[in-house]
Image 1 (cartoon, one colour):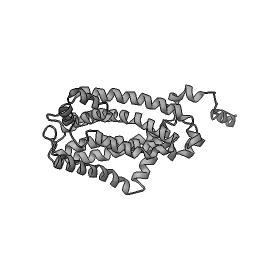
Image 2 (spheres, helix red, strand yellow):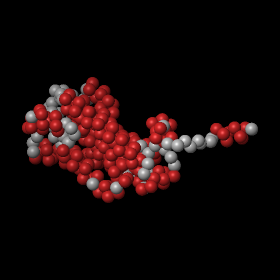
Image 3 (spheres, helix red, strand yellow):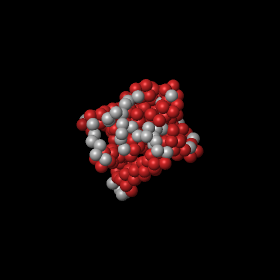
Image 4 (tube, helix red, strand yellow):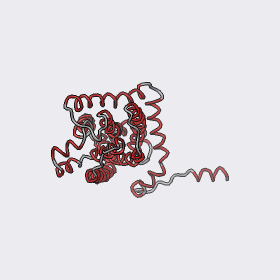
Length: 285
């Protein structure tokens, strides 16, 4: 009887269209899979190879040096609130690096877990979500570099730094919508992977990473700057610089609000499009 009872407890009942009707409950039920996939990717990057940690350190530093040289030394663009130009750039590099890394990692996440997708049922949205968690670890490594730079320049953190967790949540929401869109497109249309590096590189140069957004606002005026803020990363970078640079740095609330609204729109669109194509993933991976 004990064996029979145990057997009954392990039975799985398949219901028609259960995946559609209980998708969000299943996301919570399979949350441990999210932890497992994220931990696996982190372990591969940071435990089994030395280049993982080195890359998380070198990549943002190298990009920062290029940005400082081009925009700070050659173009001689101004900083904000009297902060060193290096801190201005790195304060923006923090969220941008997370955004770019999350999109790049998520785009190949379904194809990289083809065996799992083809054989086992679970909400596929867990896979790109795990890619975001892995990118979050890179963000924490880069945050340690920021603290070291602030100490080097004698620029102590202020109370605004306490808002970084909220700003990081904003960044994750801004990244997840585009990540879902690109993941679905790349899974359905494999040639799309060649476009992804161009999208990421283009986004770097149209976002105020190497220069202050004040330069854009003063050059083009408030109406065009608000249009420019339709780029989700504009509001994110504004928030990070306000929190990190402190002093006279001001938060441009309309730009942040514009970026947040668009980020939420992209998130809804990304979830809808991902869910639309999700049922075909097992057939195309």
